Image (cartoon, rainbow, N blue to C red):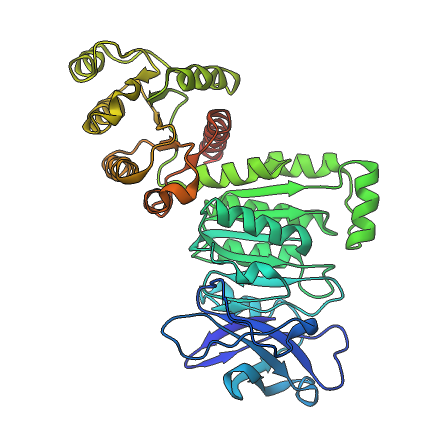
Length: 453
């Protein structure tokens, strides 16, 4: 079901394709930003699991059991009773059929503050960063923040672990929806909504198969025309995988060559593993995109510079020489034992002279031989980490060139500094090789977009 804000009322247009229990349907609903709750009263919730109700306690999440009475599920308006909130009622409207008011109204830019799952025989659910509902522990984790990335998965059991991974990477999410075996709404319906949704910047999907390849191509072309990168993780390519998909959700995966041809024609970004999915989202959602393959690197480690240089060559990127004027400025700033080639290694001296990072970064960003800048800061922590984050964020605001950070410190060791970067959509990587590969993909995608315009 989809929940839609209409005036001061909250309505749920939906249909129920499978029978419901005689005494109604129970749902777990989480309102406000999810947080891990330490208190779990013994009241039984969905599926016998304990439910939690936190009352009105200053912005803490409210988790309650919502019940739709069976006698009111046939159609028309009916109340949705929140048992955890002392019998509070919400207006609900059931709308038969697909493609009408529910998706049509949403496509006008009305953001639903909640998605509840469509009732099918497979596991399915919905999530947004402000109001979440479903049958999984994902909704109880305090790792999500609002953003512009929308995901649809044909597997709940994989889609929600993916949600965990994206949350831990501090990628801002707008929607996560899993469609199960698609007795009602399917992945293509959700993708069409994401294309029309003004708050969605990046679209990604885990796809086993669709029964209308022509419609998939139309959706992909619409996403491309809207300037929204569409990342597809298409599975079921092997014979055994295709059989597993048919048993899992009933998907007929089709000929993989047909999917690849559609992706090539429509600028779809095809990925084959979760690491690439996460990394590509990071770079595509960055405030600036690379305009060329020339990378400038500023590092506090010579070894990391060597590794990144090799990775750039493997990924089809370049580390050109800096202009003579840039090199001269750096020579005046850096210690005499620094390497001023590209990569520029200012050594661990930056820990003694934090201003060195800001001064050198500004000159590298200004160099006309450079299209993008990568900064390797090792395991920087504490106040110095926040100073680094503020420096990178400030320089990002001054340049049209993308800046990427490679940072090996555990997120918990410098949480505020990391959030200072990721909250501004500045990509942060732990692995120089993955960083280079992601930049290369972003550049290829940008060039393909330019060639079609």
